[in-house]
Length: 232
Image (cartoon, rainbow, N blue to C red; front, side, top):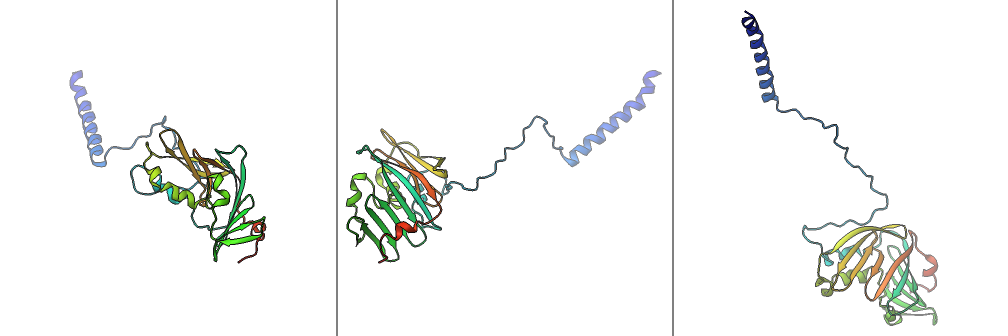
């Protein structure tokens, strides 16, 4: 008798189970929340960010990253560098100031100047400017008049770096308080490093011949340097 009494209840329970199962089939599986799952890591981007690397997929090369350096100026800037050629014991200070139409590179008694009239080389000792960039006054420093960007772009595109062993690596660094993107190019004995600000200005260069480091930066044009020589 007891077994017979339970049969309607069992039938009802089985019916309810079938209804719930069918409902699950029609509506699909419901998402579940894992209480132990951590929240996504959300980090705000800094205001002054390093240049970004974009381009086709595949291994990065020195040549593919060359355009980070020497870009046309979109605003005024002045960068002060410490130059350390491996052939000399004492560092040399260099200042690069530029805006949309003018560039001055000041090293020792030399000013390399560019404007709408083209490039020129000026000497403080003689107060004379000549057309074009004369590389001789800075040849012992293992740099060129455009060491701050255009020369680096050309160097990264050279077959010498293209034949280097190992993959090129990039990293974000802070130099003289500025965000920079650094490129490490491995070689047989040493790894060369080139760092760029988002403006295209060099931030650091480390090779077997010279070490160049940004030590100060301002988003202004140095009119004092420009006024040392009259405009052509």
